[in-house]
Length: 487
Image 1 (tube, rainbow, N blue to C red):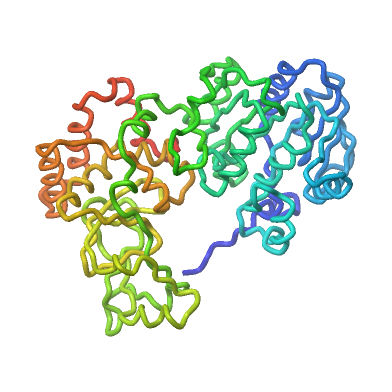
Image 2: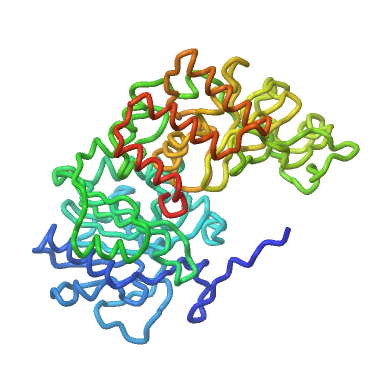
């Protein structure tokens, strides 16, 4: 299948390569106003990805001295800042070189404001400089925005206010655990505001972002002002104008799951968070694994069963629930192939002939389907409970509650791995409830019950246990019904 071009040209620049997207004016005005309120007396401002100075008008009007840095010159004349055309990563590296000890790169700036470039790990700059970047950043070199934020925290002096609009994947993604720890250990968090998915859509970007306000040093920590993701940009603008945020304690937004690395959760009801304290995690009860990655699907998978390709391969159930269908058929000699091909990896070999549950990994909906013993799974999560637990557990995993747990709590970005699935709290059901849940799953598999009707029955059973109040139930159902807006 041909891949679409990732190039997005604007003003002669590939925006995907440099990661530059213009900040809406109402975001700029809000950030500046809030940062000046936190520290009215500051003098020096740094914008390390200045673009066209979209973030700097308010600071200029307040009489601040501003340095703007960018790898590209987007304007002939800069109105608000002293402009330095330089790669900020290299600027930060130079500071580290000049420092007496590595990491001691504190500067005199009172404010650091940015809309850091957002690029995935495919960015050629990261790929070509991986070793150097890994030595430079203690949080890893996963993407540009996380390195920018890490550098800004390092450069901030005590009391410096850091305001960014940034991809929100760092809140929950496991690869950003070290960045979260850095924020929590070195900064006070003032605000986290999730932005709607359509905020940058006019610029051909659907990246989910948040407004993050930090202050270097732990002594400034008070309540954290938060806002869950509104449905659209107009709603966000109204929220910021009226400052309709919710105040909460810092420990209320840190997920209490020892397997995860201080994931930051926004707008999740306490009763849902308490599930992680009150019930065992999936991985403590059952084996949660990934299995096979071929390294070359076009060579080792067939869309239909053929001679030599007869192993049902459940690569990703996606939105399918209860009853799964093979996504492809794996080469029969896959075990032999894995022994001679380095990229062909077969994990957890002892589970390859066992029945279990295949879960989705990509796409917003979370789903679980029955995995027959003759089938195998790819890198998507799979669970192997005792036979008596398979069917009621499939029902539970397809509930609106578990979709909410996965997408509102565990991982807001797209890829669901076995590590996240292993952290799902497993509610307690008595034998009658398990029998009812198993019956719903079997009816859905046999075609006697439509998928949506099955989920309604499962939801009714779970919510009738009265663990959650009616308002929380409505929020869970609203969230799962509008996943594309909510996540």
